Length: 518
Image (tube, rainbow, N blue to C red):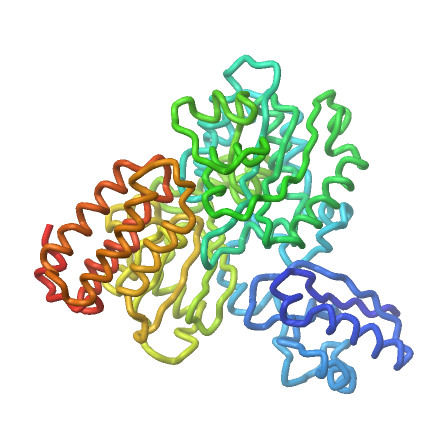
């Protein structure tokens, strides 16, 4: 009987030697005369256990990890292919505490299927949402997305259904669907995991968006640092087109939808939707002034739906299970689930999908196991390099767009970076300004010049030069950037700077009253 073994092909696993482990398993099995079926799956997101090898047993899939190439022979000696005991044995993977306490809707197939197997995808619910969408009118599809309460998972949290409805209502000879996969935030990788581990889900979500809005052409703008995601998406598009899920007659419905990959330009600012459109058009990635909004005049001047990977990937389950099913997850106006990426100085970093409402404390200690260094956690940056530093006083605030806004923080793309008590928040604040200066497209003065002056002002504060006046100057500068910048790069850079200043004034060499002065 053939033995079925899974070894991830996810970038994180590859970086840790998954290809060498897979080759070692094949070689060792052949040497021992064992017949195996090796499947290269996506990662389940337990990155501290990668490369994680899974073996199918009568009781379920048993995981071993982290497996190094030199562990392979010993695993076979221990009869790991039968699920036998070994120091790397993690037990039945579905029962692992890290997975058991999650609520996986968008990532339900992640790590379970072969990413490029259509049969695997459909056997686990794939294309059920698209098939249901084809039985509805475009208006009904849009209404399902509206009723679900799905908000953009890229950071702005704008209701996806309103974007779709706006594009659907415009009369135009050509409309586009564009996926922003230029995932450049520090500590984020859910987009990459989706494209590498479940690419047909993204294709399905974008195709549903095309049906709902009348678009016939789509583009996936993928970060240039993601070569495996680029290759996997291109292969998946070819497979889906050959099978009739894309092309000039989607599943025999008469609907046209063609999809292409565009490799990004390597600039952080191209994650801003209008700079991304400029880049796709072959121009320098410079932010456009708005209005007009892209929904009315976007790619090549035509109406365009723009969402990020996780937004599109959330759509199939909404159409398959119904808007009410999805909306019942979450709290307040934050509906559904969010793939949270736990990184930084954390013992068990990885992907955690759960409904909105969980707290940072739960994420860091119940899932993450505390700091990797064993030292006390001091600050947590939530929402990427433009997100605020969240102090312990706010670690019990539920992860919810409005609740976080109320304490001056942002959920963003769900990236969480943990820092222990050795972190210097003045240096991190300075880095935020420096990052903005380097990555600015240069179009608007508040971002281009404000960030450069910001670095200088923070240096003067930490060197003790006229601190009260310099603190006031930094606050005024942040206010100008916040209200005067064309896009979120300049507009959100004040978040990490002011949160560091407000909550950790001692790191700037300041007395508390000076730091909190308005």
